[in-house]
Image 1 (cartoon, rainbow, N blue to C red):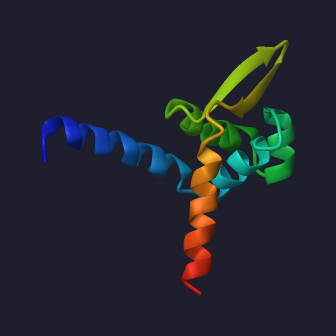
Image 2 (image 1 turned 180 degrees about the horizontal axis):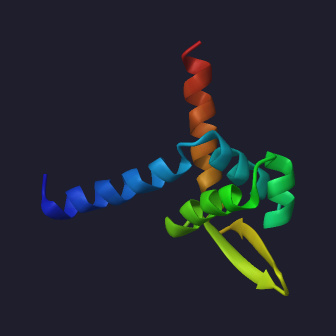
Image 3 (image 1 turned 90 degrees about the vertical axis):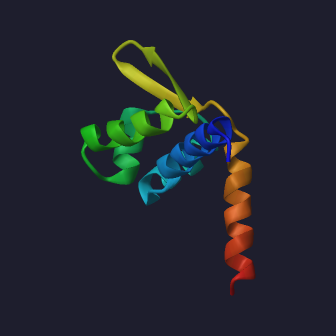
Length: 98
């Protein structure tokens, strides 16, 4: 494997790793319906705001989410809605494995 290919696979693994948590999967699924502020997601998830912010930060750092500050609130939305295709693929794997 070339160094370029290895770097590419490492970057792709980082994206998959960012998704590899139930709370982050929930966040992506929820944002597929439209943008949400951190406070809404915190209420939905039922954990402290700093925990939700860390999850959001991980998803943003790999390019899945983007945010916009409006006054004192921060709103998040999917930056790349095609990530939902990955969700469909996961469901297909689940249904074939049964």
